[in-house]
Image (cartoon, one colour):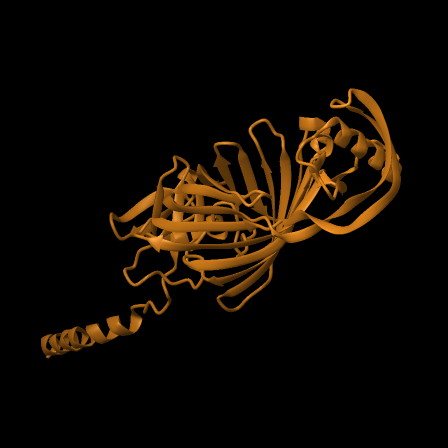
Length: 391
């Protein structure tokens, strides 16, 4: 009887074991969070943190499985996706969805903010620039050449947005530094609207830029304020003396004052359209198009003036003697008038190659198209390269 009772108890325990196990085994109902783990030697791993005992973590990766990483070998652990969900493949190989690089094209920026705690450096052939976040909406930056002159500071404020339409205000103020004894300065102030996300977007900006050349300034001469209305094709001694006498009576000098515009301070509206789109897993097509639209001026005849009783003396080579005469002379008065714009376009198509979460390389085949004040169009290439790094 004892043996029968023991067998029955073992049978009940065996049959109920799966039920007990199903009731006691914990169910994983949480969404996995993907992390980027960067080691002190520069190595990077994407995966899910399965365990963390304070000394080391157990990271589950897709490509190499589970691995233990000592906390002493870890430089940073960064949560990857804003929504806390990995992509459908369970991994993360697109470096373009996060990081401060997503706020930048080549020369211009979009309206997306640099997140607090993030910063990046951009190294050009001509010099470096550094940008960092003061808050989730405000970022500051410093730009310069490799000799620290000229130098400029930049600021951008991004407004909070719950949609894919973003707005920002930005400004750059610069000085020539020790070049020209810091006498030259300039600025650019703009507003930007961006449509899209951090991976793919397009931006439109409008603002105003100006520069004061300081000691290197001067003026542009467009012509004379007064001209002889009946200009003679042959510049004889008589014509020369008549001009001198007329201008002396009209202006108090023997010449006409030039029509000039000071160019020490020059300003112009600035428009730009920029964008980025993914090409493959780790590359993006970027483009910047900037248009500078300064006002163009031309000389226009305003009216004619009759200067009466202009007396002058000249040498007549035919009669071989000096002749003294008096006559009324008609003079044209000129003015400067606006004549549209004198556009300059900076066109910069290029590629960005995201080597890792914290670094990228980009190259653009830039070109400049401009028109001078006489209407002639010029163009020339300006290829550029730069390196992006977070820190």
